[in-house]
Image (cartoon, rainbow, N blue to C red; front, side, top):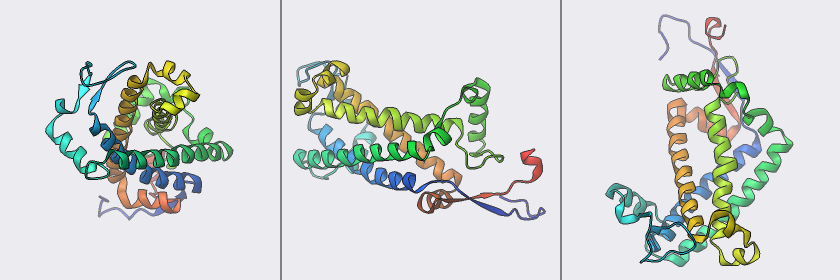
Length: 252
């Protein structure tokens, strides 16, 4: 809240998100919602996870749905697509939107290399990984200060690491392990089974990567709300982001 005894701060509007980033963001929002829900539907058909090439009811699973807290099971039931049990429909929705996810990511990567979004905004520099720099960003986040007054449009190191992990690790891992679970793709690319240690290991890794994406989404939404939901959402629609101008002593 602004001090009533100080003059009101002006608002500076900057360009933050390019069109390709905004389109990819909203396509991914819809895609991830459907894929998470349909993926839960597929998982509930056999709610056990294994390591190795084989997995059936009598094999030893490293986790099963009945081991999870009841509130998680309730949440999964609410998110399942379709709401009634239908493995065939869950698979169709999942595979359809997997194609959307893969090609949207590919297009976003190509455009971001051309317009230098990756090099300009997401490049992680050695100085940013210094313990002091990371600790500083953590303290700033705890204090609900999410941008640098000197460079308000720049990504901080925590943002960079989370986006890089999501774009270049988690989503590609989801795509590759999803392909590994397809018998047709195994016939065409048998090396996938070797890379991931078998179809059941691929299924487990797929689940772990999906969990990582869900955690990213939850944290992302929480930070958007804390940073100012309307301003953040508007910037992802129009590309323009309003940031308060800081007094000189704050940016010296």
